[in-house]
Length: 534
Image (cartoon, rainbow, N blue to C red):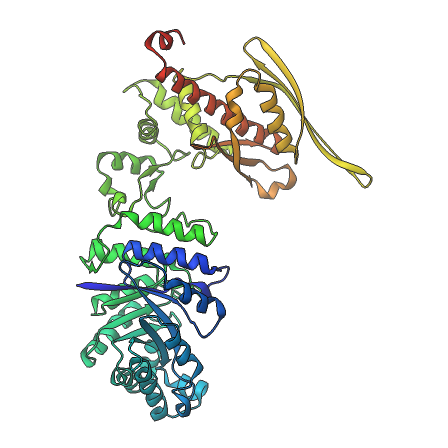
């Protein structure tokens, strides 16, 4: 069973709320889709807007290895003007090798929307397809609202797709445009269409019933050989069928083959790439490719996964370019601690109180509001401190933040910091853009004399979460920060009823983590005599 992949991210996907792509964005995604192995890339509706016209103009220069570009449009508006219809002329003019047009296959739309008879609608479809075929292009027919139309009047719906085939369409694509059809209905109707048509059948599902992936798979099982969808399921309303979920399900579980997709290991990176181009955060809970797709938190689960991963994972995450993760939380057991230690390259004793102490300590911290899912650097410091492998490089003795503003006063955020390193004390003052920035600057300023390497650290993300919302302004807050030295990044956490104190906790961990690893690298690369002395 060989399945064609028809991607409509660049056209149907852009109809989703908060989705906007420039021409350059669309060109970049098209190249990535081709690299992955997609058969057809629907670039847009050239006669509907200047952006899509520009895309097809520039796309001619793309060096696509596998994919063929498709342009989208509708049937002509009137039987009296097929040859001069602006939409059809625009499709021909864009020079895309494949042209996909939709037509009405639900009688209610034909009568109420177009106001034409059954005969006129059938002829409009046939002649529109014929006109495009005669221009030397391959033409696909999207049977709009086909499933609703078939359930309402099967004879009418079947007649319309027959007209498209008479006109020369090489594919008929059955569209669940409203997204409300159930999987068993999809299977029944696709099987019926396969019995009466002579060309390959495709499926185009929308996700209004949260069934677009299931409906696409059922269509394939019933005989459809082309699947249309978008990367990450973006699209109008609730989105389109998500190719990122459909492809591995078909390939790994149904044994389907694709013309050009041979290796799924780039699936996760492609999903992230499209989210990045869209300037949207990746869906961490996305099946197959999400950060949480193979993440384990409960101690019993982790214990089983460490023995045999398939006990709690439906596929090997490496097959789709993802990885297994174990989270440390109040649900953690000794297995979680051991797994994370192995992941971090930390050797733990087989027996002893260390496991019990670590588990109880982590659970206590999580009960207080700490979260280590996105702050693994803080967790590692806790682990190494319990094992006697780490002690803080400095101690903050005092800190004070002054916030001054008023109608006739220039706003000032100033932090005063008193820090002890060994037996020495350093006191500094720093202004900043906001109290946390002032605190960060004052801490670094105090430590630079002792640890000049910390100049490389940059805070790249800062998040605050209110933990006890009903407590109002007296609620605890959790601060998560992500830091980077330009090569690596790490996350740390702090919790307090005082946002400044929580921020300082996270900043302390961030700098301590960096210093610990810098020293570890220095020891590892030093000559043996120096390493022994350090």
